[in-house]
Length: 390
View 1 (tube, rainbow, N blue to C red):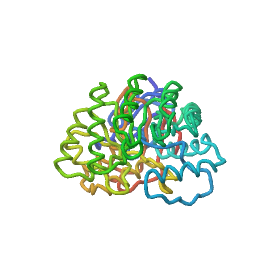
View 2 (view 1 turned 90 degrees about the vertical axis):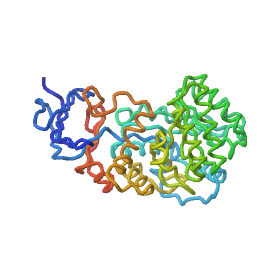
View 3 (view 1 turned 90 degrees about the horizontal axis):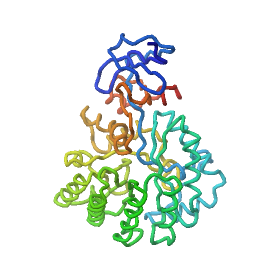
View 4 (view 1 turned 180 degrees about the vertical axis):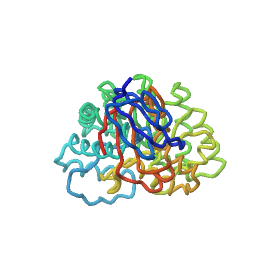
């Protein structure tokens, strides 16, 4: 039977040279190089690395300033000050989220990202406008990426009265996960904040994604509280904490206690690499059974002037920050932008096996370590079996 497309002579992440036959939106076969069936179209990979598409575990499509003239960064040395600065800037923007976010989607898709988890601000000033913009973007760009949306209380829940009801409405109107933010540092009410987040998750049958910047023993305490809530709610494997700087700031005994709680509740950790103080120690957490994955977080917005959404570059940044030098460690950094976030997002049919989705990226490198270290451009990207870039 003739395939629609064959990628001939590609190198898999485990070093095999293969031909990949694609029929429709699905991988039909993965076989030894030179054994592919006839195809309507053929891409000669010539040994280039082939991988399932990158998975963006944490991004803010509603915040980006891409498409606008460069806007200087507004100073602010605390999370609360950064929130205030962003609100001020947001009121002055004339380009809508649909345009700015759309440009960012096009950019990350061209790098090889096929699935995205995006947070969207929900507060009493903006209401659900950001959510509605992301819902429109999700539909408009479904040929490039799949988008999962987190209803994110950027201004707090109790600090911004009325936000809890808006989060509830956001979940009814199409958000996929309930977000949270610094229960102690922003809302000054760990119990009340987590009660609200987990009650909403239970009500809507949804997962949870909490931003946690709170440092040291305070942040570690909150992580253990989140782990306890996860087990009590039966949400094991459906909760993650973004940033979790505290894990890089506590003594070995408290780290072991906290990592054990996270592993037992299957709470995952997201890191974007750079951090104001510390970074979760990836290898130590992995050894304790905790999943750590990566994301871009802020891309040229009020929080950061940096970032381009290239997850291969993000893997390099994480590996560099974590002193990953051995091939096996560099390969783990690659997994942090592929298989690990795919599992956290619960993506079905992700992989390089027959029956998997033909969401692929072909990278001009002979191996995973070479790709991560060099971050080559010139990639060929497929979404649902169709070439969308390169």
